[in-house]
Length: 134
Image (cartoon, rainbow, N blue to C red; front, side, top):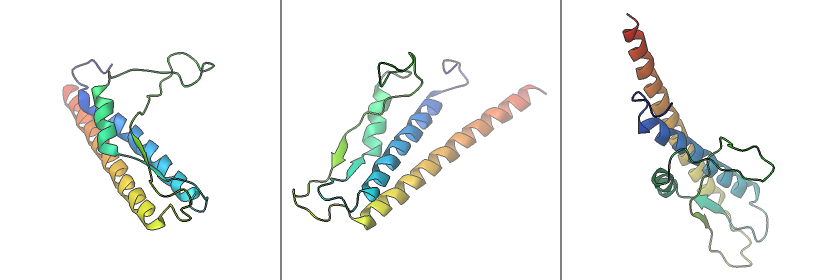
């Protein structure tokens, strides 16, 4: 369906951006949850770099995460460089809550903006369909 002329690359980019935002949100909340864990190294995902890598990949590539999963799973692999904090081995406070909350707010804004862009694209398509029906 994405091969139709109505659906341009924008839908693909927005879908992948939502997937990356979800993955980054998971990493950040994991950092916050493990804030008091000794030896834990906070992880993060560079949104722009990961989106660029995803767009360079062949679009529509499906993968299986486990051999017992059904074939042709609809999940897309999010591969990017997950960075870890370079704190020392005995760093007792590796997670800075202020930094993580800032990252969480930034990611939330990115996610909400992407959803708004997707809604606007859908509105344009809906209006085009309504005009065509007249």
